[in-house]
Amino acid sequence: MITSSSFSLKLLDLALLFLKLGFTAFGGPAAHIGMLHHEVVQRRKWLDDQQFLDLLGATNLIPGPNSTEMCIHIGYLRAGWPGLVIAGTCFIFPAMFIVITIAWIYVKYGSTPTASWLLYGIKPVIIGIILKALWDLGRRAVKDNVTAIVGLTVFILYFLHFNELFLLFAGGLIVMLISNLKRLNTIGIKSLILPFAIFSLPALTPTVFSLPLLFLTFLKIGSVLYGSGYVLLAFMRADFVTRLGWLTDQQLIDAIAVGQFTPGPVFTSATFVGYILGGVPGALLATLGIFLPAFIFVAISNPLIPRMRRSPWVSSLLDGVIIASLGLMGAVIVELARAALVDPLTILLAIASLVLLLRFKLNATWLVVGGALVGLVRLLVG
Image (cartoon, rainbow, N blue to C red; front, side):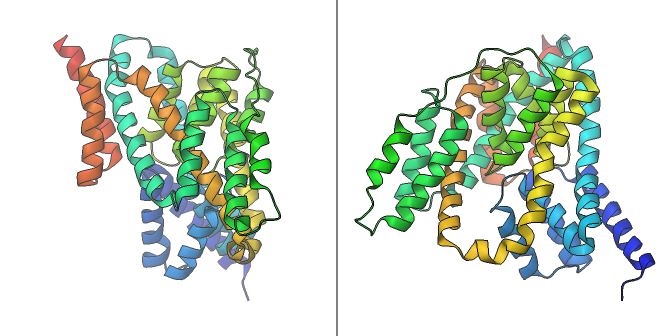
């Protein structure tokens, strides 16, 4: 029998662990997963290796930030609904607080020479980091010729101004149909794919900023984003740069840089965007919007995990959604690189960062710090 005091201790343990991780989990989702495994499997023995792997697989079946959803899953298994809320909130809060502080400094001093030169060095490093993530994720996501072709097609269609949500779900549907119906002659696959090939949603004209629309936009992104926190680039650019006209490409890459530089989930780039658009209320609403779906999806999917994993239809649908996400991610890297790689030094920084990540597995946080130092040295040298 679980007493109220032992349950309270479980909640306290969860809060302390995930607050600690929220302040120290640098390096992106892969690093977060490694730290989680060390803490909950090796040190605390809350889960065994197989249970941990089952949860890791489950996070790939639902949209949202994988490492944050792992925290929420662990909290839910450890202490039910209260544990779900506490684990997720405590992991997100430190990063949100740090990002709001940095965003305040950015808004107040971001146009000064020192700040601009810091970002001068950081931005190309972020390009290298994202390319490394795309390489790692792509090697796992490209399972056959079908997924490779879908990913390449999404990459190309993005530049033809097809709607990114349409590309995401069309990619998932096409891979699911081909994977499950390619042996059946009774269904004309081409007739199912053709309507997607000619469908595109027009871009919207710039819209006046409002807090409710900010919240709803991030809620939509959090509800459909698969693949990696870096895929957030494609969605934020499509909504906030192209359709709404609230951000510039420079501000977007600054937001991604801050999300990478700080501990915790990369999705706190949304916090940064919310602050520069709407101050503290905007930061809080953006954070709530981007992360709320993760809590809901974990609560709904946890009991369904065994059946979802055994379904070939769901499995192939998600393969398609993930490869489409990576196609979008690759397309946005091209556009962001135009803003970040402005001279030979920034090009060299991006290449060096990619080589260090691929060859020496260097922690991404140290690369970002190094990029900032290069920017400062360039400022001092003149």
